[in-house]
Amino acid sequence: SWSWDFGDGSTASQQNPSHVYSSIGLFNVRLTVSDSRACTQSVSYPVYVKDNVGLSEWSQRHGLRLYPNPAEDYTWLKAQNLDWEDYEVQLFNSLGQLVRTYQPEADTEALRLSTAQLAPGMYRVQVLQRGTPRASYKLMVR
Image (tube, rainbow, N blue to C red; front, side, top):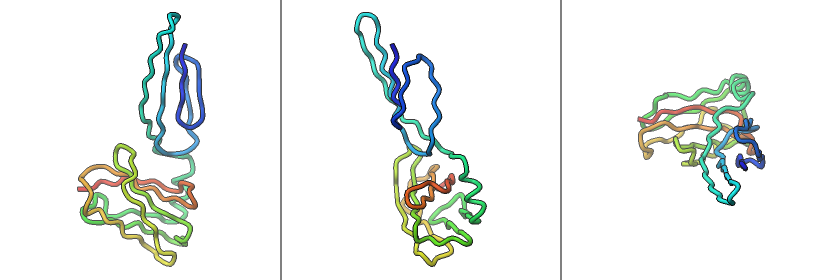
């Protein structure tokens, strides 16, 4: 028998199920297999869901831009017609681990994200409004 736990509260008992995540983020997927002799084996893998329907439309409506990209010491996240008061910006490494959180000033047009102390590599910048993902960007740090 097969027992899947997708890490978001959803489960399945088929051998090869499909699953659609309703939000972006890091999920720990666990498969437990049991045979007729009561032998059981489990394995877990992290699954990183990168995109969510509607993120690009929201990003375009607010004119969000991330530049320069690739970045060395810093990058700017600029928005038009956006009050940053209810927002936070999170930076994740390539393993999906949260590296930094930025709290923008309410009356700012652009947020400077320091990358000077980061190891070179690929990162993800996520913009959240009251905990809801609104935009996500890939950022290369040199």
